[in-house]
Image (cartoon, rainbow, N blue to C red; front, side, top):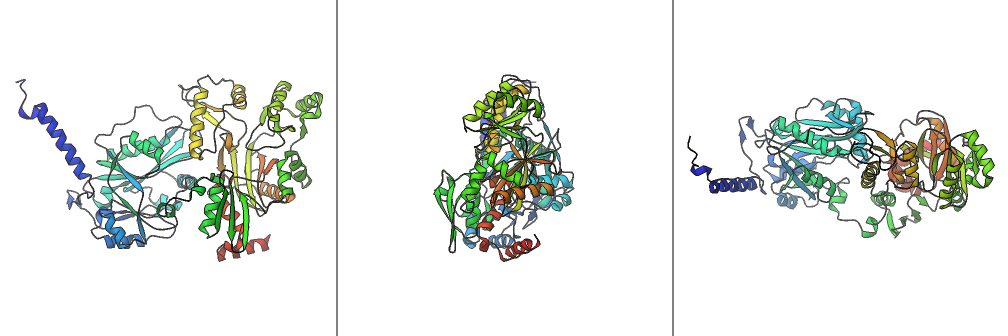
Amino acid sequence: MSSEKGPKDHPEHRNRDAYSHRLKKMRTQGMKPPINSGDDSGVMKSDVSIDCGWGRIVFGQTFSDAKLLIETLRAEVPDHRDIAIYVRDPHVVLANAPQEVFLDPSHTYRLDLSTYRAAPSKPPQGFFIRRLTSEIDAQAINRIYAARGMVVVRPDFFWRQRDARSIVYFVAEDEHTGNILGTVTGIDHGRIFNDPEKGASLWCLASDPQARQRGIGEALVRRLAEHFLARGASHLDLSVLHDNVPAIKLYEKLGFKRVPFFTVKRKNQINEKLFTGPEQEDYEALNPYARLIVAEARRRGISAEVTDAKGGFFRLSYGGRSIHCRESLTELTTSVAMSICDDKSVTRRFVEEAGVRVPRQMTSDAGEEAIAGFLEEAGPLVVKPARGEQGRGISVGVTTPEEVRDAVEAAKAYCDTVLIEEMVEGEDLRLIVINYRLVAAAVRRPAHIIGDGRSSIEQLISAQSARRSAATGGESSIPLDAETERTVRSAGYTFADVPKEGEEIRVRRTANLHTGGTIHDVTDIVHPKLVDAAISAARAINIPVVGIDLMIKSPQNPDYAFIEANERPGLANHEPQPTAERFVDLLFPLSMPAGARASAREAQKNE
C-alpha cells in the first residue's frame, strides 16, 4: 500500500473541508432554518403544538402563516403559559398582534448530540436519576415547580403521560430518604411532528431549593441528553432567560451553544414581568419578604410606595386607606403586641397564661448553683438572649456548666438578659397565623452537609452555604462561627476532617433559615391541636400577623412545646401557600375578589 497522500488527504484539503462544514452548520442554524418536506419517516406535520400541562409548546417551524400562529396562541388556557419556539419571522408575528404577544427575552441553546461526551463513570453522590413512575412523583414535581415560582401541573396529567413516547419526565431521587430533588422534561420532535432534523428539546429543569446534594441539574441534563442520543436525536435544544446566569453557565459547561432561534409568548399575568420592563429601582432594592407583598398589592391595583428599601419599609394605599409596613409588620400590630414578642420571657408568660404548653425556664442571673441544679434536673439546655432574631446568640444542647457559661457570654453579645430553658427534642415547626387563622405551616430543619470523601467539613459547609444563599436570594447561609464549630465537634469531627462519601453531618442545631436551615411545607397535614395552640398564642398576644414557633415530635402528632412568637415573619419562606394574598386580604379586604370575600364571610360565621 502506498504511503503517498491522495489529494483529499492533503492538510490543505482537510482544512477546506472543515471550514466548509462549519459554514454549512452556521447556515443550518441561521435566522430562518429550512423547513424540509420530510424524510423517510414521513412528511413533517403542520401547525403542531403539544400540551405540557403548564401550557403548550407551539412549534413555530411547522407554521407557514403568522396569523395562524397568533390564533393558536390566542387559544391559551387561563393560568397557563404557552410558548411558541422556533418562530421564523418573529417581527411579522409581533406586527400582527403587538398588544397580545411579545418577544420572549430568552436565549436558545443547542447541544450537538453527535459530539456530546458523557460524564465520567462515577455516579452522582447521594441521589440517582430515574423516570417518573408514580403519582407521588408527580406531586413532588409540582412541589418543586411551586417552590421555584413555576406554573404547576395537574398531577393526573403527569400520570396520563407516563408512558408517552413523545414526552419524557426524569426525576432525581435522594438515595437515602426517597425524596424527589429535581426534575426535567424532554420533548421528542421526531415523534411529535416528524421533525426532519430529528431534534429534541429540554424543558422545566428545576431542583429543590432545599436540596443539599451537588450536581442535581447537571445530572438531569446529562441523563436527558443520553436518553435522546440513544434514540437517534441529532440535537437537544432549550430556552433560558437571558439573565439566568447560573443556568447558562451550566449549559455552556455541558457543551450547549447559543443559536439564533426566537420565542414568542402571549401577554398574560404569568408573563407580566417579561414584557412590562424592569421594576422601579426602589422595588428591586427591597428584600424578598417585602417584595413579595408589594408585588401582590400591585397586582390588585393597590398603590405601593417604597419609603425605605434597605429597611424593607413601604406604604400601601387603596381607596381612602393607607397602611405603613415593614415587610409583614404593619400599623395593625400594636406597640404592646410587638413589645410582648420582643422579649421571649414576656411572650412565654402571656401564652402560658392562655394554656399554651411551654418548657421550663430560668434566667442566667439565677446563680451558678441554681443553674447547675437545673442542668442536672432538666438535662441538655438551650441558652438564648431574651431579645433577638434569626437565631443569633442561641446555643442548643448545652450539657456542662462550662458550656453554659460560654453560651451565656455568647448570648450577652445580643442582650443583657439571657434565658436558660430545658431543651425539647423534636423538630422546629413555624406556623403563620394571619387574622387568627392558619395560613401556612412548615417544619424547619437545621443545616446538614453530605460528605464526598474529598472535601473537608469546612469546605463542604462553605459549598452548602453558597447553594443556600443562591437559592434564597442571599437570605440563608451557614456561618463558620463558634456555634457551628461546637455542633461539628459534638458529632466527633473538626472543621479540617474529611467525612466519607455519603455521610451526613448536622452542622447547626437551630433550624433558622438565616443560618442555613431548610423549610418543608406541612400545611396540609399539620395536627389540629398544633393549629389551636398557634391561634391561642396569637390571641393571647393580640397580634393579627405572627409566626408561632413550636417544638414538635411530628406535624401529625399533637405534642408540642411553645418556643417563641415572631411579630415579623418572613412570608416568602412559605410559598406556595398564599401568605402574601391573605396578608393583603387582611389589610385591604375590599381588594379581594367578590367570591373570595363571600367565602371569607362564610368562614367567619362558621367559627
